[in-house]
Length: 246
Length: 160
Image (cartoon, rainbow over all chains, first blue to last red; front, side, top):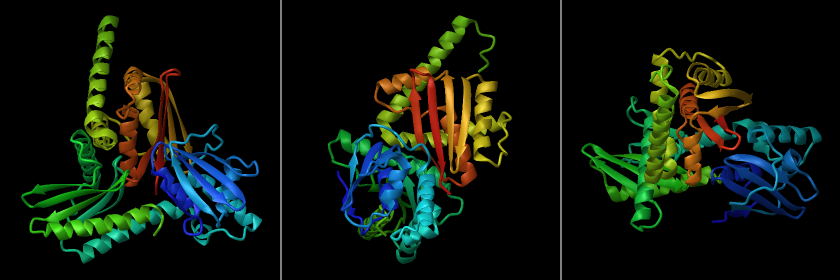
């Protein structure tokens, strides 16, 4: 699968966030009127970047950041020929923005001028807001969480205070893993969702992206059709948030 | 298990047993759960951490790097699981390098099968401790195992 879009709609930090969640190795390619920039992401880390005028490493990141015209696409599995970036992405990004600020770069994205280091937290806040909205509007879903397949909790909102979020995340990931394996063994296609029924209600695990899951808790007297529809809607919204589109 | 009184032969057999058990467990988990095995080992790490704390491990360090270093010290100095380790902390990232770990044979077997190792006392316990400290907002961004150099690199990212 190749993801692509316009640089007018999505800026580089959001694109890199998307690439970091995609898997082992992903190349981010910016095709602009000024030339091609390529950033290489490995295991969630930006390890190399190169620009059209011989820029490499963090210099290439700094020049790529101000590109607002052209398109981007992601190439999964593309590996860098070398590695020129050792520092964490947030540190690279912050320094690049600082350099641009000092140089008086005109087209720097405003949101990153203000709070470049709060990006991950902002995404978490948007996810928390989405879950809050869901629970306020729905009577079919009474608790919800967004978790990574590695057990990382993006946000959780459960009705019982004594719910162990970390354990729910681990259980949901295990359910996903087993379900995915089951689909593969029985040739049922790719995983979409799993519903577990208990005496006091249901647990729903649904894929948002290949790396992130939605967990919903449903009451025993639930309209499953409505709950599934709401789960579809919320996972679409969460996917947009995770991809930096909202 | 106190292995200090074992003969060399007994110790070798014990190491073989640990290798077989861990390899079998990891391979089986991977076959069943795939990538979600990492999430399952988070809960394993929590229990391992609890056992170590009951055995006297104190983790009151404010700094995440020092916290991981204390875990490393316990494994290297007290349990001799590895020969040495070093820590590098930069902004929100803590990198732990482990040299000559006893479990390298297990890791190599898994790598030979195309499986990225996920059960490692350094990884699982440090992750559990960091997640406890950060309210769950820690992830592993790099876990490189190099059987040729007998070195592992674990990089933890604190998200908040």
